[in-house]
Structure formats: structure tokens, C-alpha cells
Amino acid sequence: MRKLVIAAALLAGFGFQSVSQTALAHEPGTYESPIVESRVKRFKQSGGDIQAIFKKHLGAGNFTAIEDAAARMAAWGDETPDAFPAGSNSIGADPAIWKDFADFTEKSEAFAKAARALQAAAASGNGGATKKAAQMVGASCKSCHESYRIKH
Image 1 (cartoon, rainbow, N blue to C red):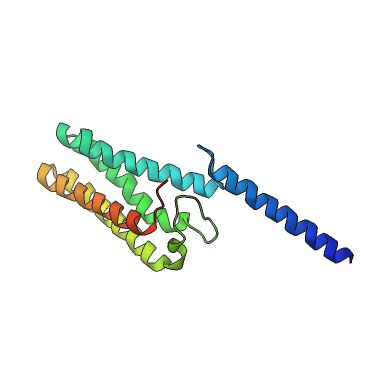
Image 2 (cartoon, one colour):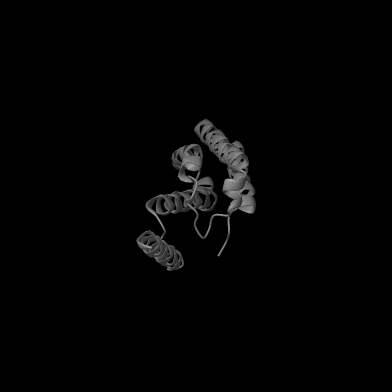
């Protein structure tokens, strides 16, 4: 009987923790775990970088800024699968990530490859090639978002 009471208490505690974490996930600026907070930050950085490339750097011919942004995005693409360990669900991450992790990884690799191509294009100083490479980065973002992002 004592084991049953202990088990019930533990289950109740876990249930409360899950509800608390779910509630926190819906409050602006809060996340379920440090890994989720970190990956949200990295995604926001990449989004800001690609927007700055199109809205600011391409028009100004600032290839150095584009190279720097592309390097950050390539590094994030390489690291993305590690930022999604099993059980790190969040409100923006579709559970399909973990159901087809191989495809998710392929899309992350495609993003990193596109970002490296952008970095190389920017290093060449060729505006047309850089713009085309930036569009490919954007397309790789869209491809993954369509499959694995839940927009709120």
C-alpha cells in the first residue's frame, strides 16, 4: 500500500510539472528548457541575418556582412539536429521532427550547404551570384518550415 501511495504522489508531481511547463511554453519570452531557449535564439538570429541580407546588405554591396551572416547560418545548420534531442518538444516544433529525424537532418544539412554557398558567393563579390545564393538559403528555410514548424 505504501508503494502505491508513493507511486501516486510521484505521478501527481510529474503531472503538475508537465502542466507547469506547458503553461510556461505559452507565456511570451519563456521556454520549457535551456535547449529550447537556445534553439529559438539561434533561429531568430538566422531569420534576422537573412532579412538583413535582403533588406540591407545586398543593396549596399556589403559582402563582408553577408559572409559573416552566412557563416553563422552555416554553423547553425550544422548544429541544428543536435538542438533537437528526443523529448525537447516545444510549441513551435512539429512532432514530425522526431518521427522523421533523418529528413529533418537532411533539411538542416541543405540549409548549411546553401549558407556555405552564400558565403562563397559573397566572398567573390559578385552581386548577382550572391543574391541567387541568398534566395537558395531562403528556399531551404522555407522547405524546413513547411515540414517542421508550427507557426503561432
